[in-house]
Amino acid sequence: QVQLVESGGGLVQAGGSLRLSCAASGRAFRSYAMAWFRQAPGKEREFVARISWNVGSTYYADSVKGRFTISRDNAKNTQYLQMNNLKPEDTAVYYCAARTSGIATMQRSEYDYWGPGTQVTVSS
View 1 (tube, helix red, strand yellow):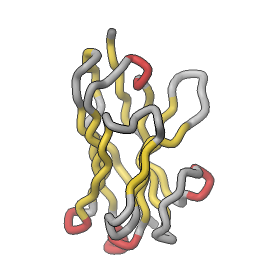
View 2 (tube, helix red, strand yellow; view 1 turned 90 degrees about the vertical axis):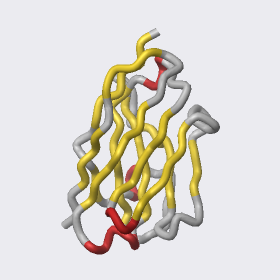
View 3 (cartoon, one colour; view 1 turned 180 degrees about the vertical axis):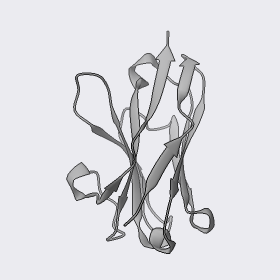
View 4 (cartoon, helix red, strand yellow; view 1 turned 120 degrees about the vertical axis):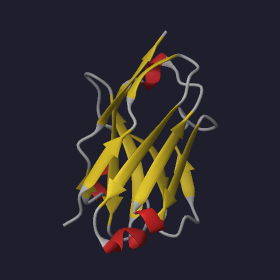
């Protein structure tokens, strides 16, 4: 069983930055693909960014490309999402997800473990 816990959310003005962290339990973290998803009120949970197990591959949703950066530190069992130039439309609950196969995808149904989420609110 893997437990994921997000942190770093909060309230920020448009144009500001936040860094989300996701701490994972278990020694197998380094073999997992990881991703971030988000869900705004009244909307479906959507893909934000993903990273492969060996940090060799990253991919972003078009809406965040150039503003967000996903990374991971396998020695610390932690992944990160650096969010710059935040916009009001980035307001959502952000979720960390892990896929045990190690192959990162954009499909939320293919992720095996989820964190409880952290709220990000961007004011205009």
